[in-house]
Amino acid sequence: MTQAKHSPMPWAVVVHEVSDKARSVRIVSEKTGAVIALCKSANGSKEANAALIAASPDLLLALQALLFNCNHGNGAATWERDKDKARAAIAKATDDSAPEPA
Image (cartoon, rainbow, N blue to C red; front, top):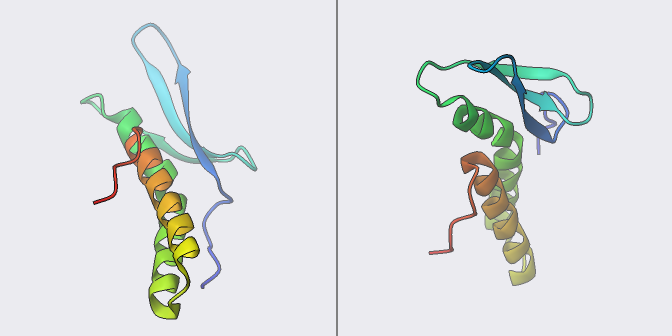
């Protein structure tokens, strides 16, 4: 797999209350504390956008693991572990519980 060039992960959503009517929603690297992105939205979707962005590295890793298994035919235990990683990444991206398997 190609070495990632993005900020160190995991990434997290940090909400800072600026005033009674305003808040700042940031995505930060949990390892370095560096701000990766600042989410702004007029329609109240800041937190949802931030959750999706913060989950991006986890989603990438889960997809890479699943593709590796597709190409190398690893055993059932590996598939189950990687499916669990995918479900966890989806849950983080949607700020919800992971979907049930189809």
